[in-house]
Image (cartoon, rainbow, N blue to C red; front, top):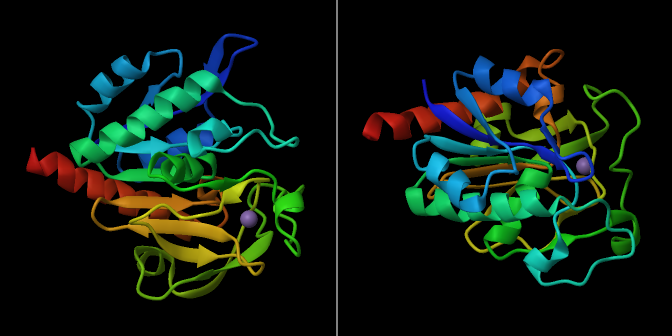
Amino acid sequence: MPLIAVTCRHSHQQGVSHIQDAYVQAVEKAGGLPVILPPSLSPAASVDILSRMDGLFLSGGSDLSPSFFGKPPHPRLGEVEALRDEQEIALVKAALGLGLPIFGICRGMQVINAALGGTILQHIDEDRVGAIQHRQEAPGWHRHHQVEIVPGTMLAAALGPGAIGVNSFHHQVVDQVAPGLTISAASPDGLVEAFESREPWILGVQWHPERMIARYPEFLGLFELFCSQCNNKSMQQ
Ligand code: MN
């Protein structure tokens, strides 16, 4: 089974790293062996571990420091996990060099975009007139808004083309998509909800499929797609 490097949250106030069970369980259920990399590791040690892995999975979390996409901090910028930022940007760049598949969810998608030279809208409600609500207060499995999946994409192969309901727990979103990435889903207000690349292999989604799997098993398909890519990588070695 492929070894998957999995990033996690970090509380600098408490000096504690932590991750939600749903990510770990989704990777395992999809046929991967998750290896959690706490942000308390140095970026160098994190990259060393990554070099022995078969894929990189970036979980959700708080806001990426806008210094990583060349913007000053917006007044509504939330908590920044600085150690995690440094670790994850280094991991994405290293994964590209190693030819490892990369899958990012929510913040993870935004980190991929910034590492590849794209930008992030720091507060949707103020930065995008006409935006719908993207921070639901409904349960995590609830289909809060629809996204339109672009035909012919890997995402469409996994979930089917057309509209699908997803959850939404973000106040930031990808703005300028980094070179080499293709938009594969958008919300009704035109925000980027997913992107991808086949070579290098990258998948990013702005919603949280891991919180929907119990009720909508099709969302496990995204983890299975990723883990099968990592398994192919593992077989080549
Ligand atoms: Mn959304």
